[in-house]
Length: 226
Image 1 (spheres, helix red, strand yellow):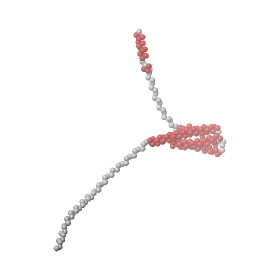
Image 2 (image 1 turned 60 degrees about the horizontal axis):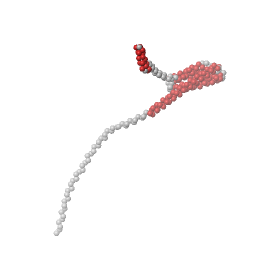
Image 3 (image 1 turned 90 degrees about the vertical axis):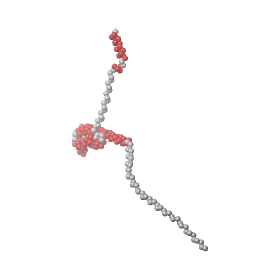
Image 4 (image 1 turned 120 degrees about the vertical axis):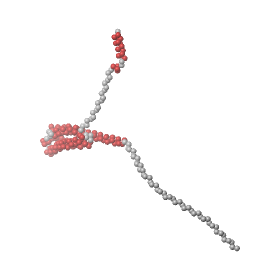
């Protein structure tokens, strides 16, 4: 009987305890992870895959065996030599300067112009190759041209983004300068002049005292004649 009463008492007490007191506290939600800073791709990183494809393609070309005129074969050979010289001597220096400041329009623009000129020369080689080169060399040229075209467009987009960012930065700076009130004009310095020396006044001479006029003496009248 005592066990039954104890059981009933325990049941009653458990029913009065709120459910929230019996539940384990919910684990704290983890803090959101910090977003990593965006990785800035350098011009070399944008262009290198395409440049590697171009170099590999040039090694497979044999323009002296193409079925075309000697003039076009010589022109193609000269263009290939020009591309190789640019890739070996000119472009690396420009890319080094651009990679040092990838957000600078002034640093990236020379490399972009060089790639534009390089693409034009390669496109000329590909056009001649479509008419006279073997199918394997022609396919390699098309792939290299398309790869370099995508890379130069990507670099051009990057250059435009950098130009817009710099333009916005300049506009924000101008707006901030316009918002700054002009400084109050400085008060003019007070120049203290030494007092002017007092002029000594000459004493005014006193007027001379007038001598009293002596009284007039009466002239005796003449005696009447008898």
